[in-house]
Length: 325
Length: 291
Image 1 (spheres, rainbow over the protein chains, first blue to last red):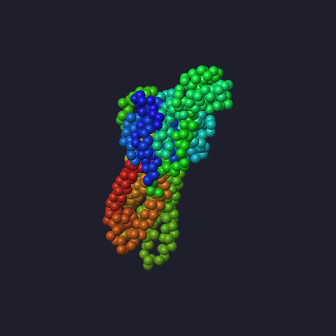
Image 2: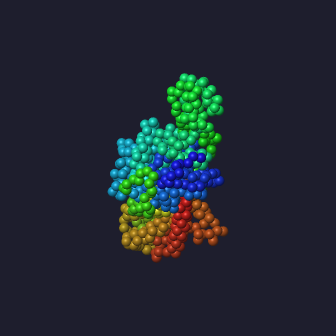
Image 3: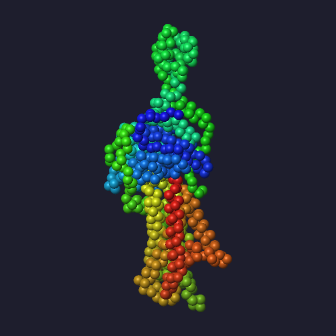
């Protein structure tokens, strides 16, 4: 299991031994999640892997069966009124009233925001609407919004107040490519302003493009977390060498018991038992013309597949209610 | 706003006390939401028509029986005045339609918000759970109060239009002044409100247990029907003091002279107990509710 850098890092959110049972079904177990302050942490996992349940416990919406949650340095849900005013969240899709306009929906939420002074409410709502480009549709009823517009309004609600932490659960659901790009831009702006962002997604490209850190969830537990770059390199290390003398190179390496295989215009060398300089030295010593040498990055997709490869279908327990019926 | 903390520095210590949005602002926002709901307005509007229907209907009954003095003046014959029409309208509507309004409001307040995903938004803002429950209770009580007041005002005005200020006759045969009559109507209004708030508190407790508004509706209305059946079984006499709707016809006691307060007092006290119990259950459930 890969870990983040050992240096003491202030954490915007931290869970230890988090466990949640929904009527006997384990939704989340042994989740030790670290969200470093200032990071953009992508929470990855197949559907039903416990992303939403974890987020709901972070925000105090669900009480954990066991384990502890710290949000912005204070325990949750006990001190929700300390931490949550500085946390913006879009959880489990946008929840709004269909008979109210987008603006009225936001006004209602803004009235509940502790950090907003009464006089600042209309301005904050207009700013948030403008930020997600909904100003023109602000007076239409929520009922008539497209899926993408609903999602943007949810994002606007999370951005009503300058936050220290923004939690976005599947923020690009239902968005077209342009909308997805806009969400990325917003995440970039938040990151630049020093806001910590926790974004859950099952879209790998989205995470790879926006995140500094990654946590991979599988079957209700964190199977890997840390800086994106570190995780990607921690995969199966390999060296890609461009050379016209591919066969000669493979032969030379195999003589030294280093696994390698030919590629169309070169070869791929396994680095488990050796290092890049050693490989290059062997090749040069064997008289192979080396044009280019680069480390192969695993790619998030491959990493993800490796971590979750036994991923048969898991009952979708995210967000299940504990209601009576 | 305070300056943002960038990078891996320590969390600032200053931000360690709870912050809350002002209660008045939350209440205003809740009331605005409640009274902008189309179903609230339609429901109150329809209930407001009921006294007109009852008043006009009793007018026909009255004229139909005038030639038959042997049967004495039937109760319905008294239904038209500014004293009796509001009291009788409220008593009739209390049996089912007003509890329905109370349950719908309570169902929307928590279960409905939970179903539409808006409860999350409020809790994450954050509005403290118990604070939110209090705000919700006020909102539901406001809907009920508005409905009862609309019915009362429409009934009084209808009574005055149909019969003027004369004929404010009690069931005991005495005649009251308009002022006295309005005083007695006010007593009934207060008593009816208390009964309905008790229903609302129970409904709110159910509402906190589910995310399906229909469950709230069927539980409360079904419960009232069951209570009605249980209350009518002689074998279960001993149970009657505990049934909320046991004396729900007592509101008409203000039409006697002097006013008979026994049943109204008992049922008011009982409603108060239900109110406290219902609200306590709602508090207990709300504290740990998943949303």
